[in-house]
Each structure stands twice: as C-alpha cells, then as structure tokens.
Length: 148
Image (tube, rainbow, N blue to C red; front, side, top):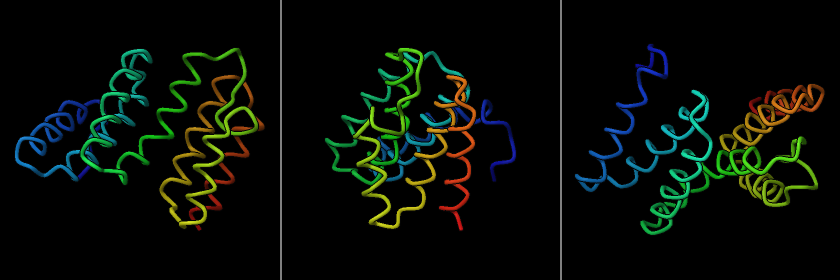
C-alpha cells in the first residue's frame, strides 16, 4: 500500500527496479523506473540529473523492447527537456511541441487514459511554472474530462 510520502518511497522504487533487472523481471522493473522518474520530478530533483537518468532509462527501455514503459516516461522527458531549455514560455502543449501533440493524438486513438492524463498533468505543471494559470487550468479540466 502506498500510504507514505513519496520521498520515503524513492529509494525503495530504485531498489525494486534493480531487483527486477537482476531477476529478469524486466517489464516490472521498467514500470517501476517510470514511477521512480515521475516521483523524482515531483520531488524537485535537479533537472539536469533527472534528464540524464531519463535518457538512460529510455535507452534501456528501447533496448529491452519495453515500449509500454517507454511511452509512459515520454511526457516526463518532454517537460524536463522543456524546462531545461525554456525561454520563459511553456511549450509542452501546443504548436511549439509537435512531439507531445503527436503523443497525445496517438494516446487518444488508442484510448490510453493514463498517457492522456500524464500529458495533461505535466502540461499543467509546465504552464503553472511559467505563470500561465489559464493554460494550467485548461490542462486540469482536460485531464478531468479524460478520466471520466
């Protein structure tokens, strides 16, 4: 049960990833890596470190043909990249980020509510950081609509 603060789970998640990789439970290891990366972002991990780790996990996911997990960290990768190269404007959702739009379109076609919600959650964070509160609110409303 997840009834403790995520800061108390972060090391255990990374340990779970390593155990999964060592025992051959690659699929679960990669899904745990996704949770670890999302939590690391939410805990405010240094973006350059997180980007390097996301790139490393992403390469491993492709190498082990774990595209389900790979797609799940893609929204986090995009928001971290945007924040690292930002020019004072959110670009996670919209014309400036066609990759995120393509990911959203694909998730919508596949009815992948998790990815859709991830895109809107991280889009909301991206917009909020840049003071685009109306856009952030719009992302929240779209996420709520997707969850229905």
